[in-house]
Image 1 (cartoon, rainbow, N blue to C red):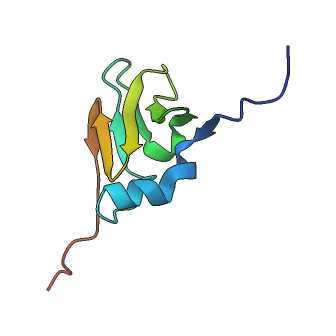
Image 2 (cartoon, rainbow, N blue to C red):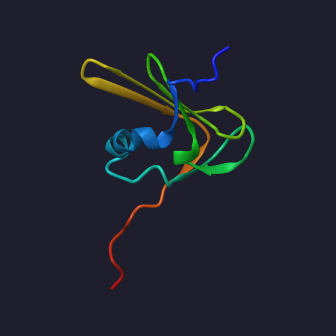
Length: 94
């Protein structure tokens, strides 16, 4: 058995640019998500990224699916699970 890490598993920081593109320019790696299975709240950047035919983000605590993203010719489909919260800059206070 190899002791090399699986090259298809990274953390979600590896797709920070893609996440920002999908979520209208928002910085997603620091956004938090509450897992629907274990209830833990973790930053998206902490989630494990599995690459294969598509991209799958999994909870770092219990391995439940947080997001699935697949792309085709001219389209992208994103499915999210659990509770996501995102804080983005708003209008400046007067």
